[in-house]
Length: 115
Length: 111
Image (cartoon, rainbow over all chains, first blue to last red; front, side, top):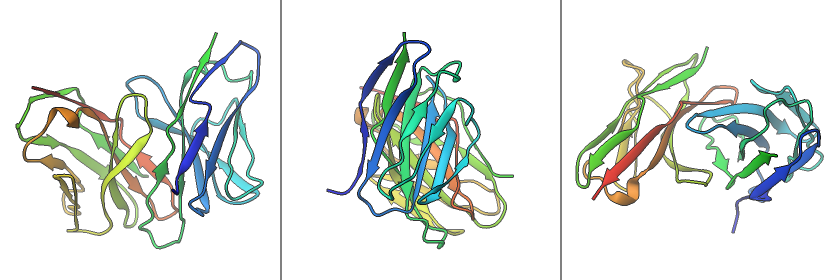
């Protein structure tokens, strides 16, 4: 089955530690995204990548870093510089065919809690 | 710029009631429009989409029509079920493959 996997589903971290969230897709999509969702709120874009070895900051990139070494993978690192990292993190991908009709597909999410 | 505005929730309905969730957008160019649904603790699932003016997206009894003249994409369902209880997000895709999401509307359906 094609889809997007995120691991782990739940993650606990002590203050001051960096942590990396995994996102893998086997949809052969070019574009991948990371969003943050806080309780009762919408999605905020952290980073996105439209091609391997290239990525752009979204609206709330401070305290986060990403890499895109392979088409299938787009890991997100939450650094100790992120002041309030406890949230639900969603990874997504889309085809980026340039047709204007591409749909964004989401993974199941990772809930990060800072202790 | 691009943005999406949804009606605030929660929306509480009895089973078999008619549902409307309002969504309006601001966009440059010709965006595609989407409705996503999120169940507790899960990611977002695509519910329906429309790619040009006057298109109607439909799925699982839900419908939405892309109205360029009113810049709207309201979600409707004729008869809701308890299983429809979830958070619904309206979204648009800009010409540069960037997506913009509304803040979400929580729907509670009571038996």
